[in-house]
Image (cartoon, rainbow, N blue to C red; front, side, top):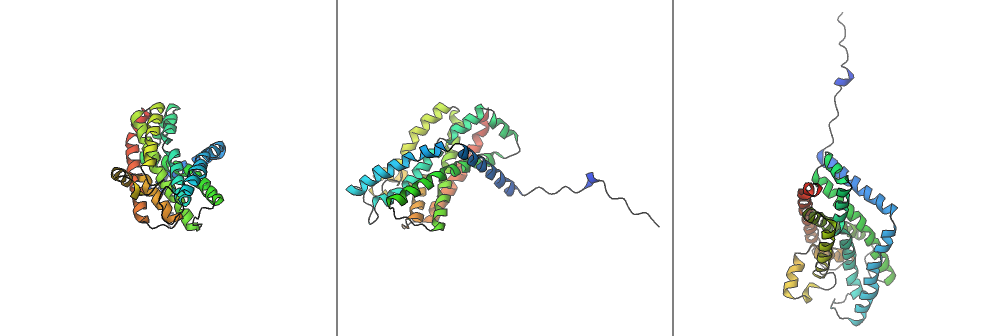
Length: 274
């Protein structure tokens, strides 16, 4: 009777297949977002200070222009019209300076260590970008609470609120990648701070956050049509106010902008780390 073959050594055991690339990519993005949430939890003072600016816009600018009826918004009260715009603007102000954090991580040696891992550059940038979006959701909560206190007629449908958060995250992701791209070009915090301050107001005033596109001069309408902030505000108004619009076009424009921003920032990440 022949002897049974011996079992293969443990070292010969079949190695489990690695998870698919899309799952690893998503896992790394989620990890960076969780890190950002922990930072927010340990630094709540920033949340309180960030709430001051949208409060001033809604309480002073919104209430004043609602009374004087200087901006034509149809049957929609101006404060209602303004609230989604301030929500987008507040998120923009957080995301547009996100590249400063990347430069700080470079100076601290953290960026070099991240680039030494097998994580793709696009995953690193996308994770940082959506982490900025997670941080910007705090502004969504602030504006929603202020809007409720001021009597703004928003749609409190859970799906609409979830959609608004998703839109803000997408918009913030693009502006964060824009900031990282600029960081890869200028390489210093001082220059990035100056450029960020120089482009924030044109992005804001060159959008439909404060006034309808139809009242803009012709050249500003062109700027508004290529400004991602306008698509973000349009989507927020459609979701939170039920105003007519093309939600799918707005979402498509934001997704395309975010993808292009991730690609541009990832291409400059190695230059930033030198």
